[in-house]
Image (cartoon, rainbow, N blue to C red; front, side, top):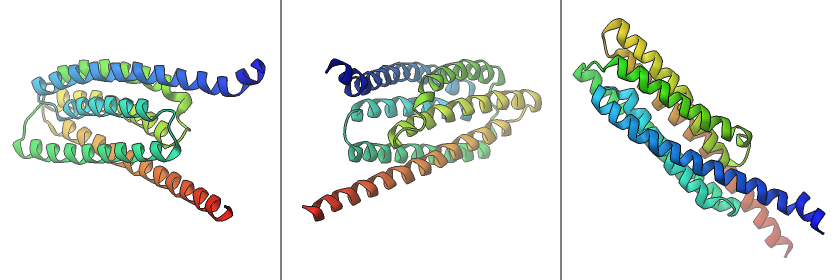
Length: 215
């Protein structure tokens, strides 16, 4: 009996416990980096850093939602994924609006601050992405968490490139380009998550309908 438990239910419970611990670590890392980047973004006048800070905050919220739905049914997890997808999509639209505003103002951010904070943020996101890598092919909720971490790491690299661009040109357009890319990444991930969550909800409804017909 004990052997069967450890090879079945107990193994699943242990895996779920590991995933929960990873989510808690990711949540704390993202909250800390949110504070670091929002301060640096405001001081440096960088849209891409500001976008990254809001992204860290959004991811922290996403990890919190994931912790809440972990262990619940497919329908609840899929609905949580839809809520997260909406958040990511709205975030992307917000960044596009801010980027347009900075383009009109013609402001130039501080390249040195962008570069240093970008490196720190990249290291933080690589650590989180490495911890979540094994769960990238899970359900829509797990996939959404992985996509958030992946997009963050790509965004950090883009911020570092933008810092080099601002330093080399003395203009703000590299920062605006990166902010736009980050916004589009967020919107693209939101679309992917929505499609998978809707497919899971549709599949669950079909299963319920089949059971009801047989009953």
